[in-house]
Amino acid sequence: MLGMQWHPRLLEAVYERSHWLLRPFRLWMVSGGVVERFFVFFERVFKGVIFDCCQCGQCVLHRAGMTCPMTCPKNMRNGPCGGVTASGNCEIIPETKCVWLQAWERSKEMRVYGDEILGILPPRKGQLDGGSAWINELSGAAGQTPAGWAE
Ligand code: SF4
Ligand code: SF4
Image 1 (cartoon, rainbow, N blue to C red):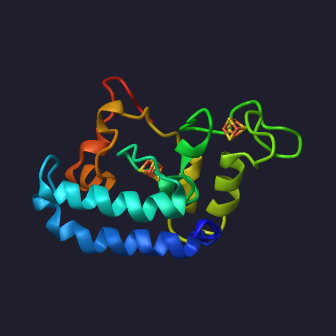
Image 2 (tube, rainbow, N blue to C red):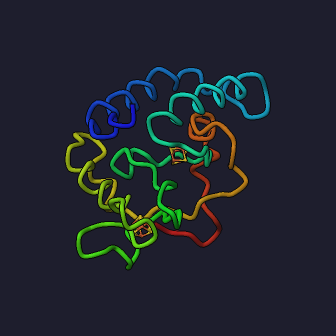
């Protein structure tokens, strides 16, 4: 299933369709209840297998080439860092390709959100760790940025 990440256009379509399907139910999607427990379980299983998701609760896959930035050893939310090797590998784990270089390559395959990788992502909210990214997105919690932040 890890190879799925090399099909960013398909994953993007799944994301978009899921967003469309869940949006009408956003009033019921609140944190702290049985609905969140279900989504946390669902996300842990599927996103864990496909994206190696660690459930940061503030998903930016569609803004990063359907590649999880939390899999970068430095958890760089805006990458790459300055340590990418000349061959495009990670300075921390030299045998693997830089996560952000993979994100860049995959973003070029995406039809709708590919250009989102050019934007600057806001700082991650640690309070959302372990929660459902879908609930946080649809409830608006994930979209709240720190005071003074302007993208
Ligand atoms: S950005 Fe966060 S929620 Fe999305 S796949 Fe990565 S760890 Fe999971
Ligand atoms: S080289 Fe890439 S994957 Fe490695 S720490 Fe830097 S940004 Fe992250």
